[in-house]
Image (cartoon, rainbow, N blue to C red; front, side):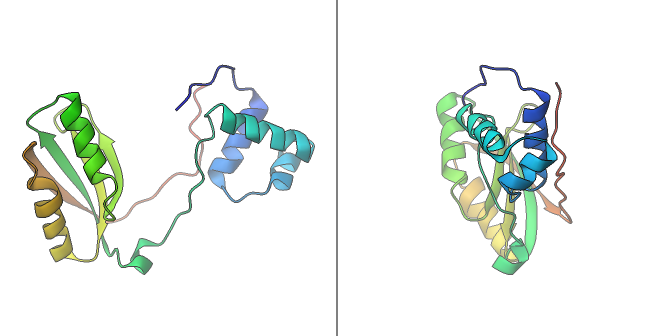
Length: 158
C-alpha cells in the first residue's frame, strides 16, 4: 500500500464515505451527493485509486449459500516469531478457501484466523490439517461465530 502524499479534503472524504457505504454507487450519484460534475468526481476517484487510498472493490456474499454454515475465529500462537515463519504462516493460510481473513496480532496470540466451513467435522479437519499440523504452531483456540456485522460507516480520524 502506497501512502498518500497529499492531504484529503472534505470532498475526498465524502466520496470515500459514500463508496464505503455502497461500493456499487455510480459516479453520477456520488457526484450529485458531493456537488461535483461527474467528470470531476471521476477524476477524484481515480486519484484516490492511484494514491492507494481507495484500494479494492469487493462484494459481500451470503456464505450460507456457498455451504459455509459455520464461521469461527481461530487464535494461533507460534513457537517461533521470526519474519520468515510469520510470513510463511500467513502465505500458506490466506489462500485456503475456508479462510475469510487473517490477522497478525500483537499480544498473547500471534494470529486470528476468520474461517467459514460446512460443518463441525470440516472445522475440526481444517484446524488439525491446516493449523495444528504446522511445526511452528504452539497453541490453538477455536471460537464459534454466532453472527457477524460489518459497519458501513467510514472510520475517519482527520
